[in-house]
Image 1 (spheres, helix red, strand yellow):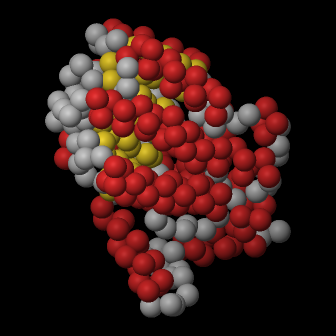
Image 2 (image 1 turned 30 degrees about the vertical axis):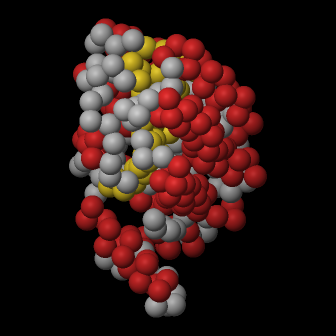
Length: 301
């Protein structure tokens, strides 16, 4: 846990929008040094200008988090500028929908590359330098937060690639927490599992790499995009509120961070399905009209 953020350094991926940008704003207010990372140059430039105007020391880096070499260079740049970071927020992510067998190899590589390997690289690059800083200073404290999703604890239909990526991030984060506890009491970990929050993730196609940008989406992918866009845009919890939950959790040493605790009932049902060895519960049991609508759309034509 980190009890005083002033003068500490935060690395934030996906810092040009959504949770990353809102965490950067909080970090600036708290007097942190900020390493802003994004793949979208204009959003990164705007975020960097805003945080500098707020008085923060800023290192802005355009990085594809799925690229191991770029992430390793980021680590070297951070170490040279600020030393080992105290807070690492592996947050960059992209959304994807569609029936699971309709996703191309490129779809899988893109979503898993950003959502999973981006976190893997963040953990791989920054954890050793954080642990070294902790060994050198008994008072040093650090924390790693990985952004997963409620889709990392549930299996909503017609968004399988995204689910797979986020389940992997939950597993990675839980293991990171356990592994860190074996070797240090000074570096902690958390996993953020937001539900539907307006962040811009439903516009992820804006950052699809060239080979994917020209692909025509399938019918199920279009339906999935429309459903996710509607759900995200109707979210009542803001990205700023979730960002505050992240900082509160880091200060308290809290592992699981939920934007919508009321959604945990569905997680409990899934876990009961598993331990009672029963078939998965209908995800639309509480809103059957949505299930009827989705089935009708997917079976039409």
